[in-house]
Amino acid sequence: MPERYTCLPMTAIAIWAKRILGVIAALNAVLCTAQPGKTGATLAPVIAREMARKPGTVVVMEVASGRIIAQWNPKVAALRVAAPGSTIKPFVLLELLRLGKLDPEQHLVCRRQLRIDGRHMDCTHSAVVTDLDAADAVAYSCNTYFADVAKRLGREELLDGLARAGFASTTGLGKDEAVGRLSLAPDRNHVQLQALGYWGIEVTPLELLAAYRSLALHKLRDDLPQASPVFEGLEHAVQYGMAHEAEARGLTAAGKTGTAASDANPQVHGFFVGYAPAEKPEIAVLVYLEHGRGSDAAALAAPIFSAYGKARRDTVAGR
Image (cartoon, rainbow, N blue to C red):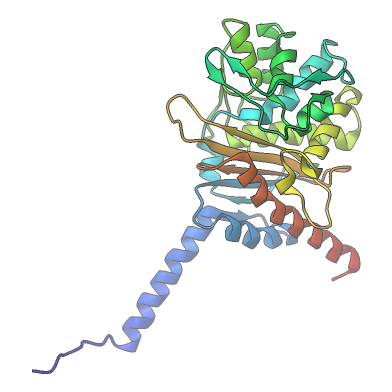
């Protein structure tokens, strides 16, 4: 007996196709949204392409206004609480400079191998980098440098500095957003681990973005002269340091990577957060990957910066 096939009428096929397209559109609306405006519309498809099948979030914000112009997976940005890793090092440096406890031009020797309270915190930058000043330490994300200088901070001073940066505070950027956590270090070892972003601090992606937007505002307004080594280090991190994967075509950028894991989940996650143009910030970008490293997040930021740079050039050219 010949096989029989049942064919759907064309009207039924059209109905199902319309439903499938509707589901896809709804998913895209949840995952990738853009505020009205040319910039958000330009960045949204780039973000969607780069983040396809990747768990995490991306948020792009205007520095001057604080307005979110494009984002991917906003729920994760508002609710995920994670250790920030090295992304908090600029704020540790800023607190040391504010308190006058660090000469930013002083060079310290990198020992590379680092053990703190039984944890292996070895440096991962190039072995040819053997001594660093403050800006270099940010650019190369040197753990031994920051572990050394963190000992100059009292545990309350470090906690106050991190709170002043906006960590463990709501940002007002997301609906029903979570709040990160800060803990007072019990001893010097834990002060060092906290300064490296591995103990006693957890943040949401929105908190981290808001903190870097604040840095970018100071850079834009030129009203925080003691932060010059921080700005220099963030720019050099993208030019040739640990965030080099974020370097864009036709646009300067500044930023920092972070890779960390929690005690509850040993799987590492990665952050990149920064701003562009480096000399006069207009946008701040946050990339968070649930599974991956900071360098992976930085690589995803590069096409976003490049797309923004192209849009700026097209605007100037009247296209």
